Length: 232
Picture 1 (cartoon, helix red, strand yellow):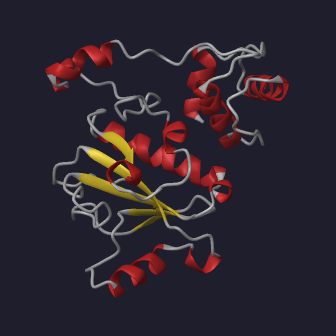
Picture 2 (tube, rainbow, N blue to C red):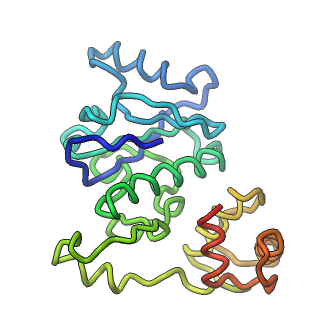
């Protein structure tokens, strides 16, 4: 899916299209809008439709036109949508897969951000940090980087080495890790509310997932369950 360009990349920015209209749910419409502004092409490299389809936009070898003043060294990804509740689990699954692929291509040496971090715009409006499982530095804690020490900048080595794995979760927990768990379970087909509360409904979904994946169905989310969630 991801075509690694020759130009330097160190950041990935996420956007939303600011529309929920079905007729706008395609990269061709985005391209038309951006050409009307006098641009050479659509500003984003990838566009993710409501059904999870990933459409190619501007070639990755070209700098995007997506984050004014912050385009150099970036990849730009746009998800179709305006209202937070109307983004789909299919879209979240696709953006997780795409961003994981990008992270792996660069051995983890890229960070992920929302347009809102460099703009006054509330874009993207969905909880991108939770969806991607980002730490405080913008790194994907789910990504399997297998990064050799020699590729790590010295000033970040300690932070990477000390980055904790996902904590064990169980009934009664309330935190952002539970939200990530619920997002991953929804991608696997469970219709949970992503409220960060590990209640009975979430526990039942965990047990069902564990049974489906040949794991001990104890309802406790440990390393084996986290790995299965990521693999899915």
